[in-house]
Structure formats: structure tokens, C-alpha cells
Image (cartoon, rainbow, N blue to C red; front, side, top):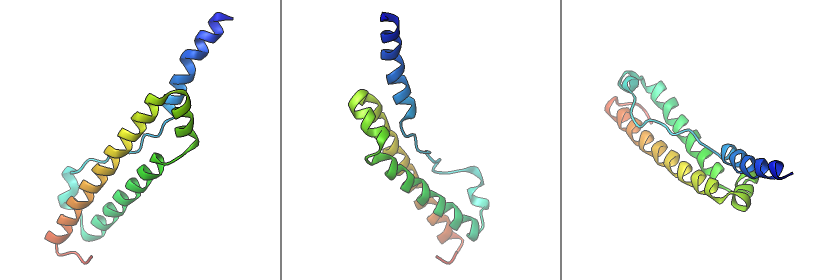
Length: 108
């Protein structure tokens, strides 16, 4: 019985930590960015908006976040740190891509 409780005490936090949101963190600059045409730049900018929205949603009150707060709060802290990093990276990438749009005289 003690082994079952010990295994449960170890597995539950591990499962909660692995279930926490981990939004995609974009690279600010990619080697192929300079080769993108105006349409591709617009699509890449839209992708940054999608990633940022997803990170904001992961930061909100979700069932996983509530469970993490109750049972394993360090996982919730990790989620918030990751979502902050993802949002910042998406914003920086969008600014960089918008600069490329300006250099290439793309319609906005």
C-alpha cells in the first residue's frame, strides 16, 4: 500500500507538469527570412499573431492550470514563464518581419 501511495505521489506531479501548456517559442530571425516575398512575409506575420494568441490562451484559467495551482504549483509557474517567453518572441519576430516588409516596399 505504501508503494502505491509513493508511486502516486511521484506520478501525479510529473503528469501535471507534462500536461502544462508549452506554447511554441518562435525564433526571432531565420536565415531564409530575407528571401521571403511580400505574400510570404504577410503569412509569417500572421503566424506570429496566431502563436501569440495561443500563448495568451494557455496563460488563462484552464483546467490544467487550475489543477497545477492546486496540486503542483511549480508547474503553473513554468507555464507562465513559458507563455511570457513565447509572447515576447512572437512580438519580436513580428517587428522584424514588418521591418522586412518596409524594406521590400510591401503593401501593408
